[in-house]
Image (cartoon, one colour):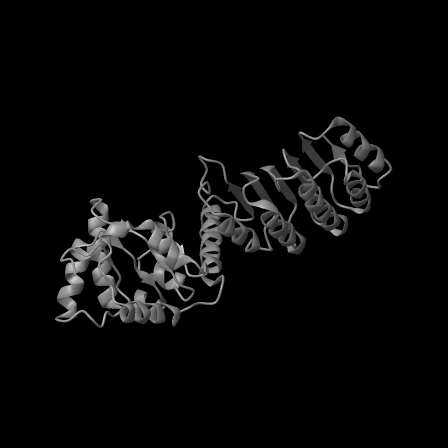
Length: 318
């Protein structure tokens, strides 16, 4: 084997490697080109693993090694913060893998140049595969933990500003959540606190699709104190799918008793195919007083105004 390991992993025991494991591990941490930590609960709480990782982190700061974190389902987010590691926060923006993806091992192999791999026997390959599969997590756990941590941190920041009842998510190219995958964006929506009073979603475009919009609508339906909702430059992505999602939001609005202001700016949730459903829902709603529609055809606005003109509670449509 090469004296300068191409990739180094702190979890898998290599039965073919003889000699002092500590010496070999130290050599790997100090010379590897790619560091792939399998981040389980046990990895977090192993002093040996953390010592090795500290060596690599110092080299990473000097751009001597690439990090490819692999988050497991049992990764303890609270312990991560308590110990001051903050791996989830600091490494979440890297090219990391989640074992919720069935192809995560193959994806790692694609990242690393093939000429950096040392030859491996069939038996050793099978041994490593079995070790990895033995720690196969339940799907979605790590993503759920990440979402909970992110929401919690957002609430902490909002509380410091005196506005813990409102949540703002901006997904534009220069915004805080610009680099999120669709999976993570959906998880954020699925973990929205049910006690918030204001919610604003902006610049997601159409890259998260209908599942993102459905997660948002489902959570809005469960919110108990939500008074204003804004969706700006956020779409399902196709006209039919957008209007179908719009019908689902309209149905939620029909029975909602807390929302007073709804802003739909540059969305695909209202159109000619679902304007009738929107009109009926607005007529049945008893709390909404302001509806802001941007980039919606004038005839659709007029249709809604006509439909709701005899509404008991006046509805301003702009």
